[in-house]
Structures are given as C-alpha cells and as structure tokens.
Length: 108
View (cartoon, rainbow, N blue to C red):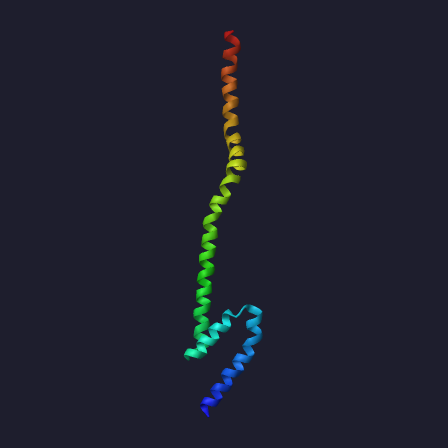
C-alpha cells in the first residue's frame, strides 16, 4: 500500500511538472526527476540548486564589476582628466604669464 501511494505521488508530481518544464526549459524538472530517481529529498535538492545559482550569480557580478574599471578608463581620460588638468594648470599658467610677460616686453 505504501508503494502504491508513493507511485501515485510520483506520477502526480510528473503530471504537475509537465507544464512547468515546457515553460522554463526543464532545468528544474531534471532536478526533481533525479531527486525522485535517487530517493533524495526534493527540498534539499532545491536548496543545493538555489545555492549553486546564487554562487553563479555572485561570480558573474564579480566578473562584471572587474570589467567596469576597464570600461571607465576611456571616458575618464577623454572627459574628466582634461577638465581637472585645466582647473589645476590654468592658475599656474596665468601666474607664469604675469611674471614672464613684463620681463619679455621690458627687455626688448
């Protein structure tokens, strides 16, 4: 009796999983099939699966974050660095012109 109930439960799970598998590509259905086949807990299998997905997502985010510095280099060099250099160097250039200008005009 216990085996027939188990078989009915497995059959009901397979029938319930068919629309979900066609909609999502079947990745989690394989997980449920393997859990049924090997007799492991579906909840534990899903926890391991979600941990794996979370780890993959974190690795991908770290890879993208590492690429950001390279992608920001060109805008920094072309836009921000010239503005900062103008703000810093303009007062020095004005001071040099004020000091050297009278020397050049008075010496001629």
